[in-house]
Every structure is written in structure tokens, then in C-alpha cells.
Image (cartoon, rainbow, N blue to C red; front, side, top):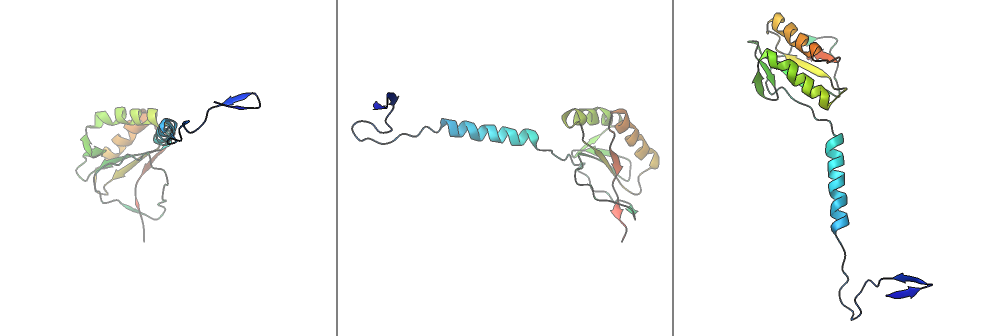
Length: 142
């Protein structure tokens, strides 16, 4: 121990001139804390997992934060996260998404040939789940 003005300080080297030891545990702890922080604050987009032929619209706008994407195929099949789901499950999945992302929006990526009744039914399930920000995906008319 070294005495400096009445304060005891530990030497960084051993008395015999050995190696200096650096404790890496605080650094590793800090890296894990940063990793957890970024994972918790990151917003993930949940894709529908199906390719559809979107309708064209002259007023189509690009949305920066999509949130959850629900795909509806030409035959009326519904896809969320690459999995085909029943219409009755859409509401529950949107509710779970909204619990994780309170201000998240839902985009319905429907094929231009899908039955209109099916599209309205999916929108209705999203609204009953509590989604306030619902949009239908479209291509910009060229």
C-alpha cells in the first residue's frame, strides 16, 4: 500500500515488478447492459411473409414506421410473420403486437384481386384489437 497525504492507495503492480492485472468484468457488464438497452428500444417490423400484387394509387405515401404487416393473398389467405393464420387469430395477434408496441401501426398488404369482403374483415379484426393506425398498402401510380 502507498500512503499519499493520509490516503491509502493500492499499487497497480505487485511488489516484485510482476504484470499489471486489468479486471475485464466491468467492461463485459457494460457491454451486456448496452446490448439489452438496444434490444429493448429497437422497434422491429413484423412482415407478412407473402408476396402480393399491390393495387396502384395516385395518392400512395411511403410510411417510415410500419409496425405489423398483415398479408392477404388473391385467394383471401391471411399471412402474418410468414405463417398462414385464420381470420379469428388476427385479432389476438394484433393485440399482442399492440401490447409490445403501444403506438404501433398495422399495414394490410392485400393483393389487388383479393375479395373486398376479406379485406374489410381483416381491417375489422385489427380495429377490434385496438389498432388506431391502420393502412392498406399500395403502389404509387406512375
